[in-house]
Image 1 (cartoon, rainbow, N blue to C red):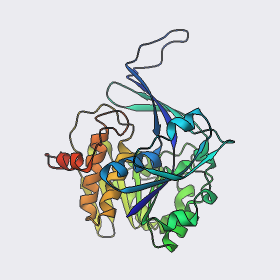
Image 2 (image 1 turned 45 degrees about the vertical axis):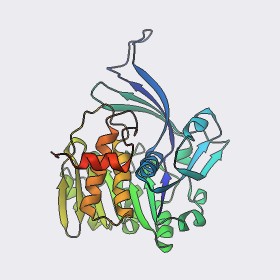
Image 3 (image 1 turned 90 degrees about the vertical axis):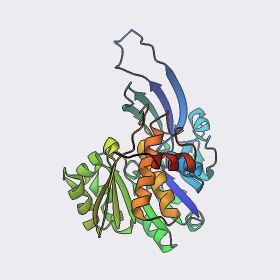
Image 4 (image 1 turned 30 degrees about the horizontal axis):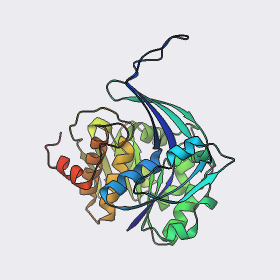
Length: 303
């Protein structure tokens, strides 16, 4: 079963540990500086591939050095990635503190230029699941049209929001919600989408607006699943946290893998929680090595 991830593809420059910016004209030592491929869609596809899925990626990057670096996606089919000499590759400097928390400097590029014409019908038809990663940053992608096209070809649809640096929030998402089978977001984003501070109330609001199921990622508090049957909470798995950069994307990969294997939604959320937790144990999503590793963590006590 092919899973197509559409959306963010970013060159990430990860710096850790960062306690704060040095004063102008001075320098501070760090332990690690790495150039990695990242972005919500690309990270989720990479995790899916490591879990054993047929993972495919549709995105837009530049014909530049950062694009060359980003295009290293072992195990992911990147045939539908468009390279455009007129578009810089989207890039982020990721500052990771000693506790694994992260801050970003983000430079717009191919993500913001990705449009529906870059995602061919044949690419969508070949997928059983079509997932949009980082939907709220993809300002030239008509989310409703893409989801409608995917549904017309019989695909299951999924979307992970990401932080909306353009502050469009629900206005960007509203028309697409009735075509989304699985909507994923986090607590802060859910509040800005709905105006509701309680994650359960926010999830119910998004259900009422058309999403078939809503998953709210809650970091160290685990995740919440809302369907027409009710709202359920799932605690996080305990791990030693090193870097939280890809945790949400890894959760999406674990959850979608469960969906692709026809697992119950509760089990899919637990799989997402375990993949997200493992990803925090190393930089980027390196902590997720295989389905077996995720399963082993799921066998440990939760809470």
